[in-house]
Image 1 (tube, helix red, strand yellow):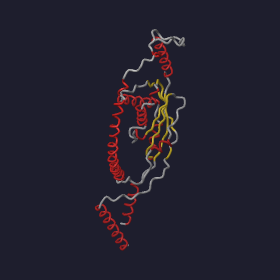
Image 2 (spheres, helix red, strand yellow; image 1 turned 180 degrees about the vertical axis):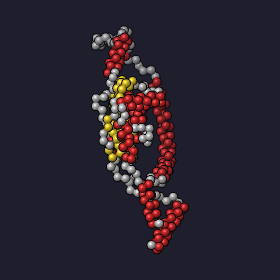
Image 3 (cartoon, rainbow, N blue to C red; image 1 turned 135 degrees about the vertical axis):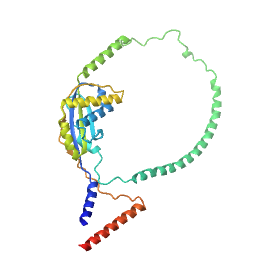
Image 4 (cartoon, helix red, strand yellow; image 1 turned 90 degrees about the vertical axis):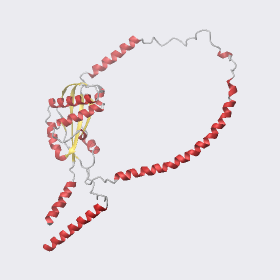
Length: 305
């Protein structure tokens, strides 16, 4: 019986324990023509997250919530995702459930704030009443101002000119007409398109998940070929464009295999166990009855031994 109780206690402790998080950082490059909005649009950022999820395998157990992805135009210096930042942004490991009573304590101050705000409205009433004499006092001022509507004497110095005003001097040069403006715009557009043709893009990513599944994810992503990466990226971009009509799909002609760095463990210390708050007399009675039963069992076992 003693061994049985020890096994039950061990199972409870193991059930409350949480494995440490682990982060995998990597990057890959894309070939093609990319507009600067490809690096800033949220829809394309989500698409790159989904592409990484697809490269991790259908049975990896992760979603886009476990992935971070950042895009940069150009392929000169691709860098792996920042695992330190990704781990810091992830929820800290904990061994205790969040107390349900926190919601009640959060809502309570709001009621007090509303009650405290009531005197403010009442105090504002005298202010409006006191403002009434001011408006009444303003009436004589308007009446006194009425005679000022009479026409003023004509100032001989303000007489209208009988001819065109003299020019202040020659202009700095002829202004551009519509045709010249259009030529300049076409030139700038052409120059911008030439800069974007074949500029490529780099994608930096991280995957943060339970350390028990990260080894398989690392192996699966590392085994992805350039063809696999290109297929995952184009599929994710097509889905993003279908979901958001404001996105314009770029022309992606190629991709590189993922480059990954050594995985990083989450070294944050788990929060200590916290006693669950009592929810009523029934829970208290049940816990006391269970403790009494355990005590009697232990006592009987010690006597038999």
